[in-house]
Amino acid sequence: MARDQLFPATSSSEPGFEQLPLDTTFPTYWKTLMSGPEMPLACLTDFQARAREHLSKSTWEFIEGGADDSFTRDDNIAAFKKYRLRPRYLKDVSEVDTRTTVLGEEISAPICISPTGFHCLVWPDGEMSTARAAQAASICYITSTYASCALEDIVATAPWGLRWFQLYVQRDRQLNKQLIQRVESLGFKALVITVDTPKVGNRRHDIRNQLDLKINLLLKDLRSPKEGNIVPYFQMSPIDPSICWNDLSWFQSITRLPIILKGILTKEDAELAVKHNVQGIIVSNHGGRQLDEVPASIDALTEVVAAVRGKMEVYLDGGIRTGNDVLKALALGAKCIFLGRPILWGLACKGERGVEEVLKILKNEFHTSMTLTGCRSVAEISWDLIQFSRL
Image (cartoon, rainbow, N blue to C red; front, side, top):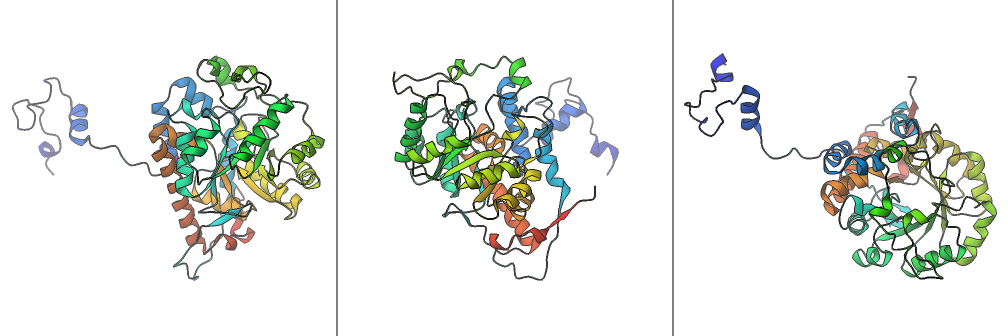
């Protein structure tokens, strides 16, 4: 191609240049010619980049921030790369089934939604949009104590969805009892008690931004039984720091819901969970937002799985970004994985449709990973798929 064809003169007298300003330079001209519809979002990190453009600095850093140096937040993602896959070929993978179950309930894929609070910070309908997307995808959504929509509204907008409720244990026992009985009556299927937050981690971004959620939100589900008032976020301790293992029997006495502990990272605590007859564990470090420099979730998984010896289901939360990550977690013993930040990215970008797209992308990637490793069903995913990297 001649140089004058590739780099035409920018004279306003030439055809096609009548609408360009007189001082048009080559980069501007090229951008004008090449501009078109936005590129489709092809992976979860594409949603991350797009969401950052949509949100304020303080909201973005509230979502993305980790504790202290954010080592664990970043390690949650990086640690997956230490595990290599060992594919098996010449197997009939013309039909691959991603379905599985959690606590006996069928889900379309082992990809569910972690409890995160304040969805209205990133999309007007907040948790209602998230719940509808989860229902459409036929997966489980764990609703947070710190949801910014009323529980009744979340249930009404997605009445057929599979829902668990995450509890930050409050100092007021009656408030805990009221919340638990309320979610049970609303059809939530499990109670997820977060155990890793006796005190909020040192989140430097929130301190620098002087983040004050009381300006934006009042929690509609934390009402004092004595006063009947809405209790603002800033008046609530995130969790009762005195809670201990023996308190679990009180929770078991007031609900028929299965109890799952979120935040377990060691075999010692996993063994205690078995001893206290809980029904599941979510291996999690709170997205690296609590105690920094703890193991990545995927690195803690095998220790916990070995400790429970098949006596309860074990799930994983933290660092999942690709279908390969999902496959690795299941191969190392997780029953399913839960997504946190990527759900908020999808919600920030496109609301309900964005969450649906995030879930669809990850499910499709997981289907591809299963197919390319010779797994025709979730039951065929096993430890044999994993090779530890020498790097």
